[in-house]
Length: 242
Image (tube, rainbow, N blue to C red; front, side, top):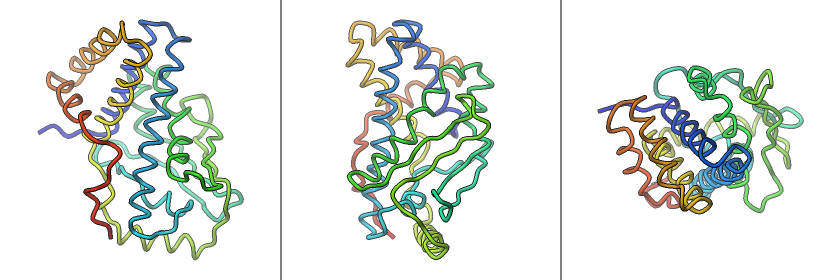
């Protein structure tokens, strides 16, 4: 059985974005890509929030950094650090497999849209109506020296950070979802928006992208993607809690 990782997720995105823009033009395609990427991030953030609330854990930046859904399992891991005691609280990264995948494929100009929109959307989905937000200050895919994200609406002590670490130990891998799930969810949101915005061209756009992905990763990849896209991505009914 194939093992999937962040590279597959990254290139699924960039190949579909490329197919959209090759078909309808960059300017016309940008709105479709923006909307789909934001919807994907918001949906992920809401699932994180639902698990956090089910456990009765603090629904703030400490909770946000504790209840992430993915962990790099193979290949080249993300490199970065977070300082929630800073003013404002911040997270930085100077390396990640998404950047490396797009750079290696010559797809930076397509992949970069993911970084423009997904993190702020994750924060929006997680924090909801609370007076907190994640703010993207810069991303390497869009020319910054490092990725920098800050958090508004709260300040945190070392004791708060330690509380998050203790909760993360209790949580273990219970909130994580496999890469097949994340790949399926990303495709689900992209396909949905492409069909809404470009109904006459949607099949051609998606077929071009999936054929390129099968050529890149081997026959059967597109079938895995479509199978995993046919899920309910809003529910966390399977989450048993800590």
